[in-house]
Image (cartoon, rainbow, N blue to C red):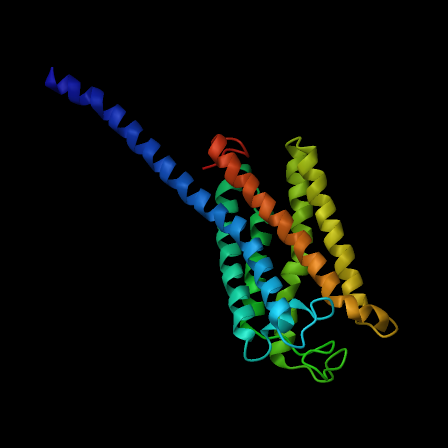
Length: 249
């Protein structure tokens, strides 16, 4: 009888162990998604506070990256690096969520956004558009750091809109038209406003240069709001049901 009892308890014990393992993995994935919820608001609060308190800095005119220049630049540098790490963590969470569906481009592109933010923190931008005071509209001489900073900005300003299109396709396949439309519109809006921002620094469009910072902030905010809501969506779906967004693990 004792032998039969031991055999009967083994499957039950195995089932409990497997369930506990699934719960632990789901908890890790939830924590990684929370990183995505936190990254955007943290980045936004940082540039609002720094931009409002920095002497001779005009948020409407000057880019966010210019906050990395000078003795107080360490705060924006730290913001780039911290949000980059949080975004990378969220990319891993997305991969864990969407892996069973075979979706790899979305998490991969979000990971590139995180790497871009890290690079933007490690390499400081060149002065431009009047900051620090006396700086010309465009740098007359480029530094290696400034060039690398701009290159690391590509995954955010171009890669994040493309990520929106990737998720628009993903949501469309799932029949979630609202999320599909929102993702596509966010991508288009980021491209459009970023184009205007870059145009404002070109010869012949000097009148728009005074609003370069505003256009850039609109672009950044559109991207962060969308990415934050995606993180909230994934985190919420994990809490509601294991299969809510495509067989979560």
